[in-house]
Image 1 (cartoon, rainbow, N blue to C red):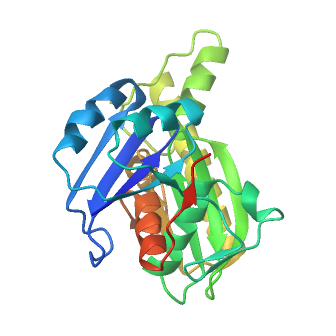
Image 2: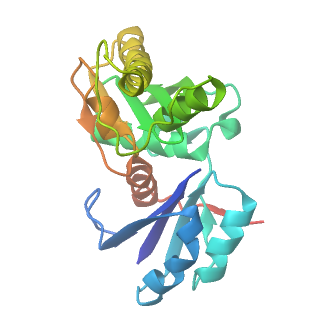
Amino acid sequence: MLLLIDAGNTRIKWALVSPDSAPGAWLASGAVAHIQLDTLQAAWASLDISQVLLSNVAGAAIAARLQAMLPVTARLFASLPRLAGVVNAYRDPSQLGCDRFAAAIAAHALAPGQAAIVANCGTATTIDAVTADGVFLGGMILPGLGLMASSLARNTAQLPQIGDGSSAPTGFANNTDDAILSGCLAAQAGAIERAVRMHGATACLLSGGAAPRIALALSIPFQLVDNIVMHGLQTAAQAGYQGEQAC
């Protein structure tokens, strides 16, 4: 079985798939914060893992800790000039974040024949454009919803910190907490909607931990996709990609 791992800036997400699994049909899956990373060893101990494909933007130290828990050597997912029907038009294709490339592959697979915007709303929000025929054009990167709100609270006198459990107001709020969150949601949603208009997109795919909250502020049609990076990894693997050998 193939273990897919998406090591992001805040969380480690994983899924076990068989070679013929339908997209998103995980045999087992999970997600942990970096501080809980050591719990993955017990979670993976009983799984039949013969291959591992790792998308890692969390750094070498996290990759090494993950590898120490695995029964086989992980292969690293990397951004290529072309893979799984997607052409990477980044100025230097190898410099595109591997998570963004995986998300673009997923978007092209999930919305075939459509110009797509894929927004991955995590620690950072990445908003990328894929043409109907599979060309990754590039995108935008902005602070994620939580980072935007915490930065404002931290750097502005007497403004409160907005917690994860806060409600999701939109429009003109009548208290400071809600005004901060409403402004940050408007900024996130506005960037996504602008990207859709610029690209003439007929599909807008949202993923990431903050996606459900940002979705409430959108005034355009969208599709929520859990773990879009792992969808891309699975699509790439089914197209024959095995990943690069770790150094």
